[in-house]
Picture 1 (cartoon, helix red, strand yellow):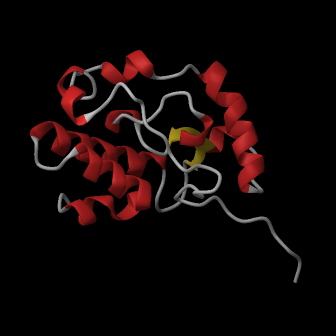
Picture 2 (cartoon, helix red, strand yellow):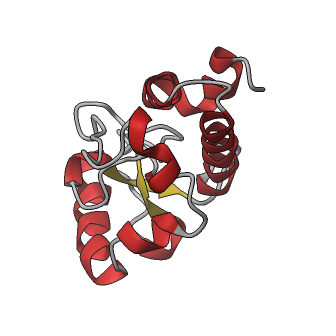
Picture 3 (spheres, rainbow, N blue to C red):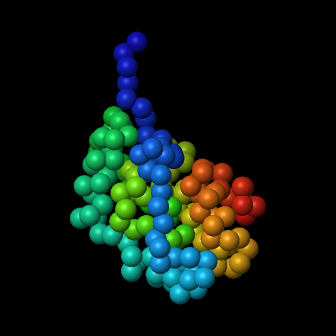
Length: 144
């Protein structure tokens, strides 16, 4: 049997993408940062910055599908939870197809942010859960 490169993973590989935080977002600043509608747009990097990282990430992850349109350059710790916007250690090429995709993760991110802003969980708990495994983050935090 011939060796094949791995299929895109629904979760980032921690050695490639450990996840990092925006130092401006803390539990005490959430109501002036992540809980403000539209705040993430003020820190989101442009595609001119993220596309070269996406190309490198596809190579680093060993994905056989190299079509950029098949991935979203995503923040492991989402901007909605105060992830570092431009740190390559917080960005990875997330697949847009399969059972657990960029679109699925987006819903999880929003639910976690809403819970943080409502005071249901702490910022630290939400970040920890999503860094550990975004696919189980809602269950781990008791939100889903």
